[in-house]
Length: 204
Ligand SMILES: *[C@@H]1O[C@H](CO)[C@@H](O)[C@H](O)[C@H]1NC(C)=O
Ligand SMILES: *[C@@H]1O[C@H](CO)[C@@H](O)[C@H](O)[C@H]1NC(C)=O
Ligand SMILES: *[C@@H]1O[C@H](CO)[C@@H](O)[C@H](O)[C@H]1NC(C)=O
Image: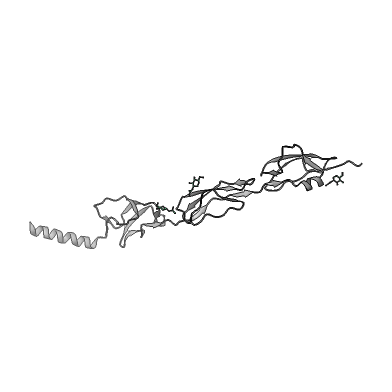
């Protein structure tokens, strides 16, 4: 019996020597491993796995493959890059108190200065080391009283503020005379620009 056991051990170590096997990886970045704890994997075998938070599977791999050089990809997990300080927003600011470094998938919220209007979603998210998200602050309009006087117009109602936010509608009326030209008395503030209608006394 002892002789048979010795022979068996000899044969099995010989076949182990020839056969490529991969054992369970000891990688501290692994979160879960689809393979069994005990069974060795053979050349070409694949195992599903996941990486712990802050790490991702290298090269977007969906599984690990047993190769002559061990498990591929190597390393199985790689660190997800961090983001730096969030980008500045013209005429706006970040609502949150800011940090030097952000983890993947952290989100921050922006806001515009008063009277400015946010165009786009007010969020940026750290994604693989880069900030995603696009927005801008649209200018308000300022009704210039000198220009209005030159155009012979005033506000239709006393309720109007001389600051108009983007897209706000304002109505003018003639201070004297009658409307001339094609510009309507009802105007919309468009990103800082408001077109003034004109009135003139009928001198004919
Ligand atoms: C990123 O996440 C890790 C763990 O998930 C945490 O220890 C670390 O403080 C975080 N870093 C930042 C900048 O929030
Ligand atoms: C920033 O504030 C928003 C809410 O205004 C919150 O949802 C978000 O998690 C905050 N981000 C950070 C990194 O603190
Ligand atoms: C405003 O009215 C005066 C008098 O009717 C006229 O001379 C002037 O041209 C008008 N302004 C404009 C910009 O048309």
